Length: 180
Image 1 (cartoon, rainbow, N blue to C red):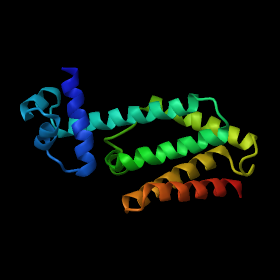
Image 2: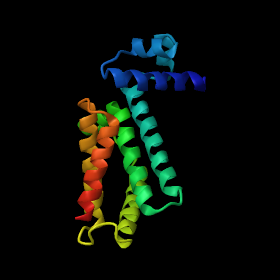
Image 3: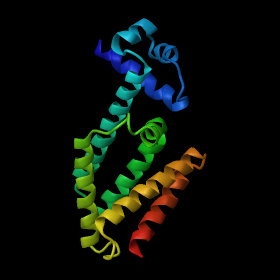
Image 4: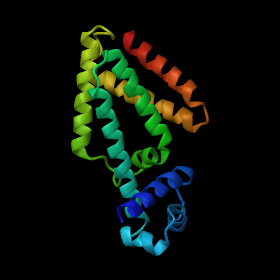
């Protein structure tokens, strides 16, 4: 039974990336179940989308914490986080779209946000202490700049620019921007 629910969620993730307006019938077909079976697990599309959002948000947070947990030089940690953020947001553009446009409905878990933000501040503080960036920049500014560059990169990818090119250019923008 758990596999059926997970199959429905995975089908929804895939189809919502292709078409934000896909139907429950299409999701059920992709999951290999009937629409009736889908409704045993989800009351409607809204509930399914919320579960998809929460599933991907949890995956995102776990990935961030796994990167942070690996002992390596701070520069490499920041670069890994940058690449991961860009890849997650560009490969799950529907979640990004929902969050950006309907953040009253689709919210990340506050506890997870606080944990990740605290880790980001810790990492950017360490980056400053080790002399990798301009000491006049506070950690909140670096964090906001990081998020803005990720947002810009995601927009470029959505506009059809190749991921690798965007990743390289946006990383250079971020890294050079904090060193000025």
